Amino acid sequence: MRAAFVRALIELADRDPRVALLVGDLGYTVVEPFADAHPKRFFNVGVAEQNMVGVATGLAEGGFIPYTYSIATFAALRPYEFIRNGPILHRLPVRIVGVGGGFEYGAAGASHHALEDVAVMRAQPALTVIAPADHRQAETAFHALWDVPGPTYYRIGKDDNGVVDGLDGRFRVGRAEMVRDGMDALFVAMGPVSIEAQAAVDELGRAGRRCGLAIVASVSPPPVEDLAAELARRSLAITVEEHFVNGGLGSLVAEIIAERRLGCRLVRCGVRVPADGLTGGQRYLRELHGLTREALAATAVRELAA
Image (cartoon, rainbow, N blue to C red; front, side, top):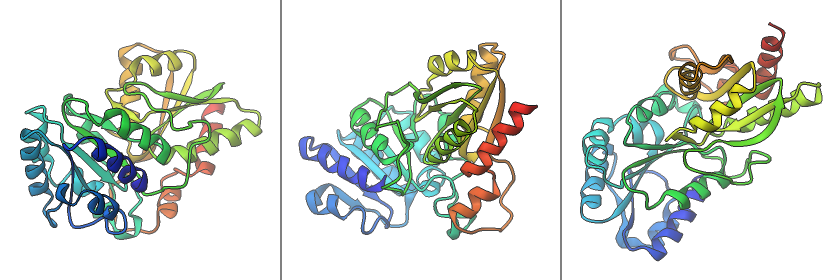
């Protein structure tokens, strides 16, 4: 998604002189095309993410549309108070781009695992929160939301190759995208782990279990009506997120079920335990937390038999 982001940003900057990019001394081999195309609107502020948000807030107050870019934990958590007191409270069009949600920086350790960023960001009702499932959907989202009023948080992945089969880059703010239909259960997925959810749904289909799959990239504003309609049709929902189960997608779906008084049982697949010093690659950590296609399919089989 990083290449999709830079490609979209260059296209936007080519036609709008207000678009600028700020980075926290990272993104090498990724952001250079923007720096080369628009050097006067590219700023490396160093390893100082709070200052980066402060500078972006000032640029937005001056009429620019600034994008800040860093690893998701550093983009969202380290400068959180600055985001809240700057672009959120003043309704300024600062775009915060956090790369590597979940375990994508697995071997770098717990400090780089973004497992609560969606929870803290969606707590702010004035902040648009977007978590694309693949690079095609990310590019669509960047083009769709670049000039919306107020701030936006994008949680993007590093993968520029994998795609959710059937999604075809579709994105609509405040909507969910259905890529599979089936009445046995409804999978609801967010972010790049949606590829694992799609594979699990297809595996279940080959075994005779017909499950639906809804992709939620627009976390805030949430796709309440879309999800309520799909949840009302089924007795079991399974949320899938590379994030703590509290505060993210699973909590969003639980809120919809409770507030709409729906008779749908919910199983939340995500991270349930605190960091314990154990680390490794993304695949290993997904296996550890039950987020592989095999584990998700097994969860569905077990819950359907319950």
